[in-house]
Amino acid sequence: MIPDTLRLEPGGTLCGRLRVPGDKSISHRAVMFGALADGVTEVRDCLMGEDVRATIAAFRAMGVAIEELDQGRLLRIQGRGRDGLITPSTVLDCGNSGTSMRLLSGIVAGAGLKAILTGDDSLRRRPMRRVTDPLEQMGARITTQANGNPPIKLAAGAALHAIDYALPVASAQVKSAILLAGLFATGTTKVTEPAPTRDHTERMLTGFGVRVERVGNQISVDGGQRLTAAPIVVPADISSAAFFLVGAALAAATEVVMEAVGINPTRTGVLDILRLMGADIRVRNTREIGGEPVADLHVRASALHGIEVPRTLVPLAIDEFPVLFVAAACAKGLTRVTGAEELRHKESDRIETMATGLRAMGAQVTTLPDGMEIIGGPLGGATIEAHGDHRIAMSFAIASLRATQPLTIHGWATIATSFPTFVDLARAAGMRIHPA
Ligand code: S3P
Image (cartoon, rainbow, N blue to C red; front, side, top):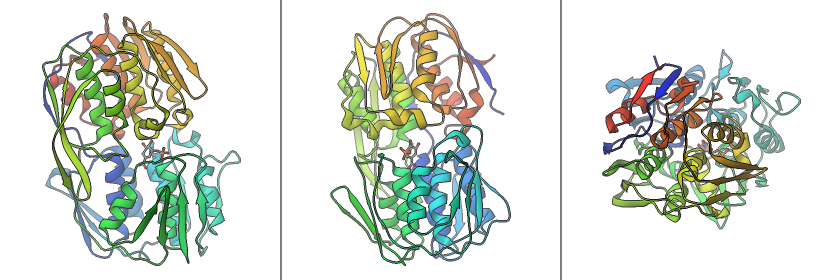
């Protein structure tokens, strides 16, 4: 059991070689595509956090046999083929996971199954029109709450047709939901993104034998294509590694090495932003595993300085802003982030929840409708609320490395969604963390 309140001792060092768990985005897709494929898909190093478990449970409810072998390090998925999913007998509870809900909406709509998708308090507050609108345009029959929030109710039997859709916001989840629905539709489905977002769906579908085309910012798939099972090895999650990248940059570290981290260029905004701030990060031993680039990241402590974060990097680092705000609060001078309104629609409103916690620690923070201004300075102790958001909890754990007093974090258990082993790894690297 993960304790819900933690006390973190101030200061400390970080060092050693760390292997963070598998990439969450890639793990979700491996389960989904394995379930839809013809044949048996084996997934090694899948993240077995609560979010991916919600995806696994949803596919089991739709008739897919998924076995956990080798103490959870290997998943074996008996694909049912593109048209083999069955109507779920239960509500599909996506828990805290936006990726489960949005991608499943595309698949369930495509399969023409009757289903209800719901989630926890946090997920039921998140916007879903961004995915139900285009799916309705494709012919799906969907209802949500009046404000567009979950539960999402899909009616049976709707046959889909392709659309040509310009995404109003840069979102890999929405892009993926439409492309996945497009596999079941008549015609060629086209999605144009306003800025590049993570492309794991496109890469993994290609690995499963699906033709996915990209021309500029437009991605298209022909309907009627089938997926063929393929083995997957999941790289370590750069979004989880980000906590230790920032921690190692901030703490009095010798050197921290993060092993086998996914460095897909649609995910490495965090490296670019930290380097612009003066971080010493080296990328070593780059190789490709299953269509995704992977490398070992070597980080040393360095004096960070504030920057204006380039807007083009925002979608490429969208999940890392909570911990980047911590880096900014410890950097010399002003850091300004704009163009990041999406942060208000994550597991919490990450602009407000981070600003509240950083101010409690004594930081100078101004919130903007689409970002934040932070002037770095000394950080004291505080009591922090995670607001049901794993990345808020872990970001403040990292902030304790530069605090002058202990930090108490409430709502810690939420980290089980993406990084259940955070405390073990953090302790092994030198952090002093106790149940409060
Ligand atoms: C994800 C896409 C991002 C990200 C989320 C995972 C994915 O969301 O924040 O944690 O796996 O496609 P958006 O696509 O909504 O920006």
